[in-house]
Length: 424
Image (cartoon, rainbow, N blue to C red; front, side, top):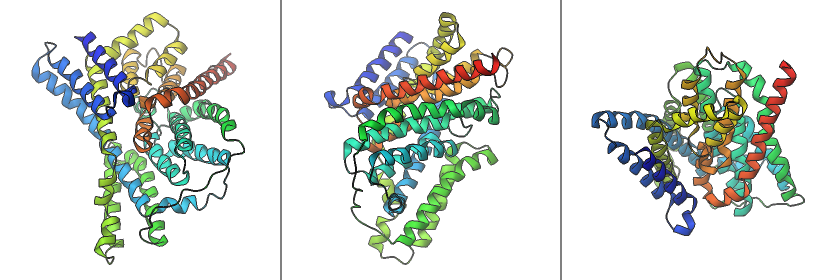
């Protein structure tokens, strides 16, 4: 039955990849893949109650990601509906695409380390959509945003869920992981950026015109500052309360909701409706959230079948070399979710074999955090950006994947060089 699940997963993956030729929305393919994988597990002879309990356990983890995504997208949509992003775009005086690409990439990289790669990708993709008029330009910029968001999150305990897992699990310490992965993470972002720069040399752009302005600049300033401050508050809330990030994002959305009620109390009903949270929720890309749900359900089925654990064990027995194993796990994280892969590696290697701050854990954080950029649905940042900008799977594979892979390998190469220079 495990083979059947793998076949279903591969077929579903191909249906997502060839969404346009098949004329079938990727959300439908993902949902069917997730449901069929779990149906196969239920029919595999396991105890029915145990199977349901497993599903509900995974659903809790999946729901926390979906609620986080829903909350973050709503806050970004509220900032957008109040023209908060126009306050930022007005400050960008350059009309050079090269300079803009540098600005966007640097902001994304460092913002991702403070927030997380998912929230950062949502904010920066939405911002780019407000600046650039041409769809093709936006696709290239968003591809760079995905790479920068994932690389910026890898070196920070708060930036990527896998680095956070290793931090909480005691495999790494906060200061050490920043020191060891900061430069490799920069290279993961910088190398693709330098390759992409010549494409836009001597090209200029005109800022995309706003379709309609609701509210005034005072409201826009208040919502922009409040929204971004609340997003920055989410990782702080997690550190203080130890509650999962989705609780912080729901708190942020609730507080912003109250602020909006106060701010728009005296406005006409029609204008108030266009600026409301309800209107923002209607504008959210629901198919993308359902697509995310289907993908995570399918991956959780693979994990429940212990396929990922067997894969990690196979890599260990076949490859043997820790550098190669970590690299392989990073590339696998582009196909399946990096969270179960890291969880499997944590289960395979205890702290006796690889103590805290061992180079293997550091490399795992780097590879699984950045390897997801190689395929657009290999990371939460990629899935979110794909939904917002409607990026075609195959377009990304042809144009961005090799850039991401080049940066990925450059980061690993520098990490190995750095370790050899320090430890001989």
